[in-house]
Length: 107
Image (cartoon, rainbow, N blue to C red; front, side, top):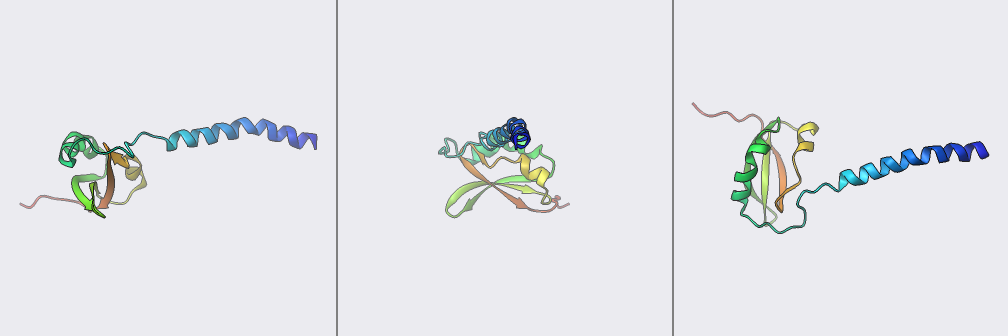
C-alpha cells in the first residue's frame, strides 16, 4: 500500500503542471467581452495584414451573424493548423471562419 501512495505522490507535481498549463492556455487575451471601440472597417484595416499572413487565409471582411457585426476570415480549406492561428475575437468583434476555397482574380 505504501508504495502505491508514494507512486501517486511522485506523479502529483506532473499532473499539477499539466492542469496549470491547460488553464493558462485557455486564458489567452482575445478581447472577449469588450465592446468595440472602433468600427469593423477600421479593425479590418488595422489587422488584415497580420491575418492575411496566416497560411491558408484568403480574405477578411465584415459580416452579420444573428444581428451582430462580426469579422469573417476566409480560408482556402479547413485545416486545424490555420484555425488555431486565427483569434476568436479581435478588438471586441467575434471572428467567424469561412471556407471559401481558392480565390483568383478574373482576367
